[in-house]
Structures are given as structure tokens and as C-alpha cells.
Length: 400
Ligand code: FES
Ligand SMILES: [Fe+2]
Image 1: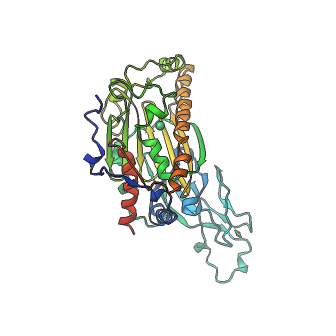
Image 2: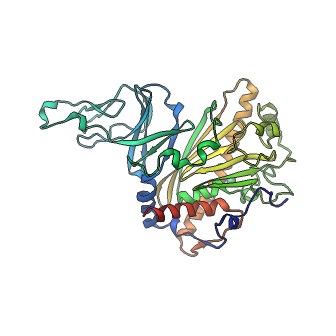
Image 3: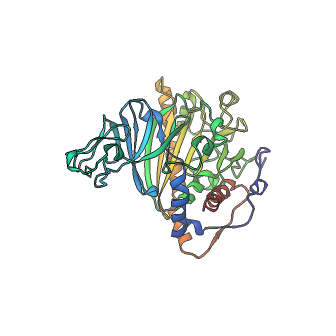
């Protein structure tokens, strides 16, 4: 079995088989097109709804690619809204990045105060402003909506697509999967590489037997599947999903064995029982020789979905050659000490594996920037890489 029957190759998806230009990974002009045409009109994931569960809960985040800072707040009506973090008086930044709970937001410059809906609630010495209509001076809104408990924002107040249209097939593929799992750990890092290269490195499996030969050993490859071919790849419009194979004959190391033994749901490989109740988007081929899926909701939200835990990975472009990467690990509440061990192991293991993934990124970016070679050569299993670059390029061309 060098290729599972459920896996089609890139050329069978109409993605071609020729080399691909790397110009979009180093071109400042292309990056500006991505900013203006794609990111300022894209739905972008900001986290989970249950991170701000109570009225007055808020989060503040600077978003370089949108050239703004954003406040997301839960209002008295329990609705989640997003505003630009700007005071309409002298355009000061109202809040610093972070999170908390409040009854309103006060600008530290002259004391203007905004309610949880972003409306101007108090204007210091209002009588000194001429022809002043307080209702017209709130914090400007961004669009905000929810999918499967994830908060999305859109810089465009009148988005080209509503969120349901944007997620497309993903609307139903994960129904209920994320419910009940909560944040277990989060970390972030800024890496000197293009955001598309970053996603590429984290979403193909061809590298696993080489780059992860020490951390993963033969857990994701076997004599039957030496290149770690995906169990299946699904392309849903601009979104993509690769389902990662697990070697059923893998012999865990002692520490892994302990973790696997105590797991409420085994780690890898999965079993028919653990996959049976998963929604269609998780382990789509329902192959018991399965580790997890790498799934990208266009353009920059990556999900690593497994049995009993998932990773949320967000890529925030800063410059053409700089990207902020945020990783969050979610799982069910531990009920026993054994559960804790079983959860801690994949959380730490995934971090170590991702560090290996990141070890190539700056070297790749540096050598692309050298200009020595203008194209990358992709094998037929690097479907997700082709699809990533093609999806961005198509979006830019279709919306220019
Ligand atoms: S700039 Fe915010 S109150 Fe003046
Ligand atoms: Fe990897």
C-alpha cells in the first residue's frame, strides 16, 4: 500500500503537476495585494466563543496584516461584536492587547468612554464640541460572526460573502466535534518566513519520515506506507484537509506507552470505536490507521483534529517574510490523573513536532529570497501545498 485507495493525487484534482513559482513568497507587491484584496475581506478566526463567556468579557488584538488593532466584546445582549480599537476623538488606541472583563472602554487620553457595543457613552466636556452628534462617534465596527463556536471577524463591514458562505462545506463537516473540549495550553512565536510557506510546512506529510525521524519515528509511516501518504485529501473550495496515516504496528516508547494506556481515547493509531462517532470532516476515510487531520479553513486557520483533542493554529502575516504563529491545544476536562498524563503527552509532543516543522522555515525563506531558483518542484502527494498557493492566487485574481 504505497497509496491508499481513498487518496487521489494532485493532478487528479486538476492542480497540475508542473513547478510552482515562489515569487508570491518574496514579492512585496504580492504581499500588498494579499493584504488589500484578500485579508481585508477575509473571515479570520480570533479564538473560541467560550474564551469570552460572560457579559463584558473582551479580548484586544493587534492585527498587522489588517493595519489595525481590534476589540472583541460580549455585549449586554450576549452578542459578540468587534470594533477597531480607535478613539474617534484624536484617534488614540483605546486598549492595549490582552483580555479582561469591563463595563466599557475608556480612552486614556481625554477620557472618552465607549460601551460594550462600541457606542460613545461619555464625552468629556461635550459642550465644548460644536455641532456634535454623540451617536456618530463610536468605535468603528468590523463584521463578527460564529462558526462551530469559533469567533470570526471581517475587516469589511459589508463582506463579499457571509461567514456561512465563506466556510462552505465546512459548515456541516465538523458539527458538534469541538463541543465540550476546552483550552489546555497556548503558545506563540514569530518566524521570519512567508505565511504560505509556514502553512505548507505544517500541512503536508511527505516530510514526516525525514524531518520527524526522531520525534515520530515510524508512528506515521510503515513499510506499507513509507512516505506517510495521506489516508485521504479533501478539497472544499479554497479549504483543504489531509488525513494523516498512523502505523498500526507502531511500538510506542515507554513514556508513550504509559500515556496511551491511560488515555480515555487512544492516541494513534485510532480504533474503529474512536472514529465511529466522529463527524464527516474528522478522519473522513474512517480509516482506523489514523493519527489526525490537518485542515485549513482559507486563508489562515488550521485545525489539527484528532480523537479527543484538537489543535487550533493561526497564522498572522506581519510582512512578506515574517509571520506570527499561534497554537492552542484543546481537549476534554481531565477526570483522573491518568487523563492528565494522557492529555499532557500529546500537548507536549505536538509542540516538539511543530518545533521541528519550524526548523526549516527561515532557511527556506532565506534561500527563496536569494533568487537563485524561481520555482519549487512538487511531488504528486504535496496536494495541500499546490492547493494553498493556487487558492490564494485564484482569490486575488478573481477579486482584483
Ligand atoms: S483621543 Fe481618545 S479621548 Fe481624546
Ligand atoms: Fe511536520
